[in-house]
Amino acid sequence: MKPTTAFEACQSFTRVPLCPLWLKICLQIAVAIALSSTVACGKGTDASAIGASKSESTSKTPAPPEAAPPDSAPLPHIDAKRAFQYTREVTAFGPRYMGSENHKKLERYILDHLKGDQVEDDAFTADTVEGKFPVRNIIAKFPGTKDGIIAILGHYDTNYPLRNIGYVGANDGGSSTAILLEFANQLRGKKRDGYSVWLVWTDGEEAVRKWSDTDSLYGARHLAEKWEKDGTLKKIKALMVMDMIGDADLDIDRNTIGTPWLLDLIYAAAERLGYQSHFYAREGPIEDDHLPFVKRGVPSADVIDLDYGYNNVFHHTAQDTMDKLSPKSLQIVGDTILETIHMIDQR
Image (cartoon, helix red, strand yellow):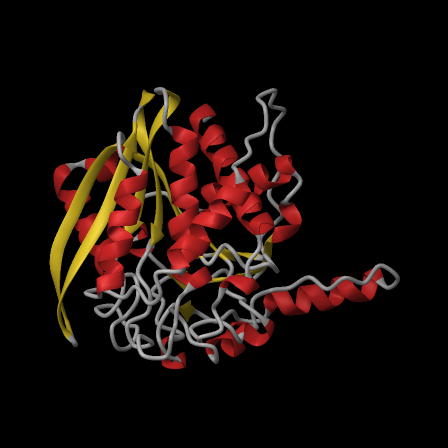
């Protein structure tokens, strides 16, 4: 994932200033900002990863998404306290980089929570610039009545280059692991009246030396290739990645490496729940676990807050700890994604 200094290059993400007394001036400023160029931000291990994106960013701010159509279905709500406790327990394992004993402990922790569910492994050995590492994607499948799959991904590994600084990745790795565990709680128990939902704890998202096309996204790249070969990709109606979603100051980016209709649908779901102020104040391209699927034509979206602390000061540092996170942020993201699933079912 991108280093602390990379945020400086991300400051060109469009922000609409608040200016209630001088609206006309603010609109002129907003237009000028929207017409300025955006910067590609990769989730690499140093600032040189910026600009590595292969996707084009729009040159101006898109029109605001339309409001969600009337829907009488009850609004979904996760158990945010439980999700936050999962985050705490995951973080307590310490550094969880590929090949480490803590990584193996976390695998067992995840599988213990999925007992009784339909679980599959996508395990392989990654040949990296730092040697060979065991990689294991964990897939939990919750069947539905409709023909098709909604896939939700989140990585559970922590940054290998930071393994000796006490880096525990509460937000970056911890929050994504935990929210998927809570989604499993919400999905199990009976067959869904909608598409099947597959939860995927991806491994090897982080670079082992320096973010690049070949040193990153080890698990996601392998899984995308596997699903392409066995025909699974053709069945996926939507794929959403959860990453860095626990920040107490939550502000989800509109990642322009993604499918516009799905990005808009996520916003519409947030709007129905009254959470829209936490979405899309910034936009720009960010490389994440969805990238191998985007390249293969799968409708995809990355749900990520890539502004972690003032000037992104906590990202990929030993300061990525539980005291920077909030159950409310997990609530906002969790509820919004459950509502998005419901809205995809209705399409």
